[in-house]
Length: 415
Ligand code: SF4
Image 1: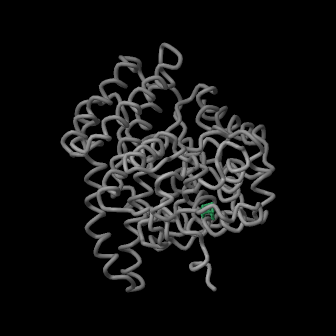
Image 2: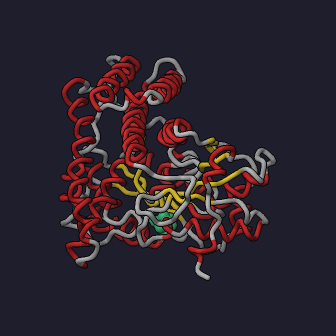
């Protein structure tokens, strides 16, 4: 029997009273997505808590040469099931599947194997993917749901972008986080009303959000040293994966700069076009991606143009198509495993914005990151001598102290 036929499906009956646990990655974005799922009738618990020995649980239930994000996510889920917080007969897990050739498509199988070993094999693991990779009758990705998730990503990126630019300069400690929470709650409520899923309404909200964050910044110049963060998507974004890197940088008195989630989504869509160009495979998917690519660029560009026009005190998201074109001189666009060419592209994007101190977050066991991240650093530095890139390793045995010392060394040069 194949793996496909043996997984536990999430049925329509389960939808009524099962709690779906979603692991953390991007706290703001995932809160929005959890909320959208709630409006569709799902009982969702967003897994923010990091108590217990997540790394140890991961090491116990997956092979120790598995990449670090897979290990952490598995450990976090097993810990959640063992925590006693959930009725084990009424709980399911949700995991994303990117559909690419990397392990991110296969975490779900690792998790199921780990669940079996831990005695939780009856717990369904729902696949969240946009390519009909698995069938769960009680969990359907519909077009309106995809549409809403897109807005969650855009809202999430905007709030993350602005809050990163106000937090280092706030006059009252905590006011940025207070505003993030206020806007998260407000938008979650707002999105409950189907009438508000209109683009004109969403664009109005963009403006209101930027106005509020601009009040925190006031006329304070953003003059702190800026440090860019790139890397494999999970360790780049997840505080659990990168030992709270953003907070550490803030405490060191610098402004962290992180390209948003939409870059990764647009990168994945562009790869659908590139696949067809190289391998002549999946023409229908390529056609869809050809339509989607400019559509998503346009949505990201609306935020960019609003900030350039009305809020010049903020640095807008970069023009992704320019980012893509810039990197073609360094790496082939066929290098798309994991974060692939997006990694050097974001390093170059940051450098073009004058952010020359860059941390490349490097998970243990991640071949794509080693090739397209660490492997590209020398070439980027040689051709852009002003750029200072430091690779920081994240693995179960690496201590935060080691990572922090490496970053401190970089900061001492930067300052
Ligand atoms: S990109 Fe790296 S860390 Fe992410 S799934 Fe692939 S191998 Fe694992």
